[in-house]
Length: 406
Image (cartoon, rainbow, N blue to C red; front, side, top):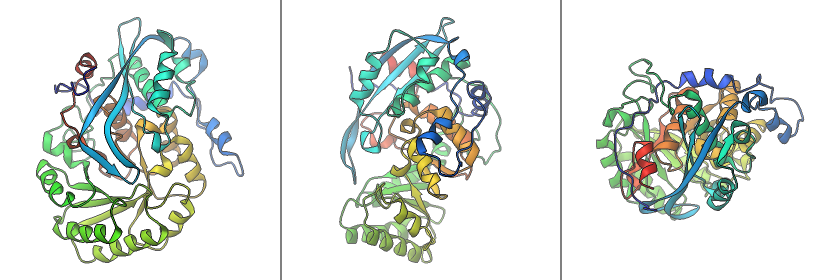
């Protein structure tokens, strides 16, 4: 396997026609069921999310192959969870008897509550060469990245176009317009306007944002909770005072703050928001997953919004946090959250304020995730897919080329 053989070519995938997937998927789902039944167990709630009609499922089968991949970060990615040097995952390929090809990607992040890569590989290895859609929709919830990858591939086969959709027009200033990352052929700079560019932890962010700004990014996410809080607050002050007026900044603590530290960050954000022209959009996952009550409490006392990330990494966690009263921002990572059809159903039913975010996937997982973002985003927020600059080499933009170079 060649770890970095990602040959750039123009993608023929059309992100813009995401709306048609909703109609296509409705044929795979039963009627929406209510999740708000008083005192119901979480497991019961989760089972109420619709699954495909079994009679329909048995009518579809496809030949299945998979290939693991590795992609090295340009520099190790440092977060509160530790240091990450290599993105590893699995590319899936389904081919039906008519020759239609569906692509999927399994890109687990085990410290975000998904399965490990080895668990995903073991699952793929035990499958037969020909699998049915019934098998795909029966993947257990403890393999959420597998659920996402296989369902995405199945959607591509079902479209009859290998995942390609027909073009559709959107308003010129919509995030689904031809100049956004959700359109089939985005312009390089305008594409990044609708993405959040990820800034590395520490002082490097003070130079990094300027290059990303020149490339077209207007929203940035900076990793905090890595260095001493006094050091980070000083960098934060400098960063906020250097950002242009139209910039937005997101702070991502990855659950690495104490309650007192989170209070200090929120107080600082509220204060500096009155002194600078850039917008502090939200503080992402300030407290550990176990402390949802603390984040609910903090959200009542500060103007700066709080967003959940690690707390809603999987669909089961999303259901749990919603049941416990969270109505703020949800940062959703489609690549590890689980079943796309169940996620679609939940978002359509509850109309949550969702920000869709990358798991450092390849073009295959990115395309599938952005289809969901185009369909389910409600607040016109930048999607968190501005991460290509973290890799040593440019990614392939064509699924066939990616597959052939693994």
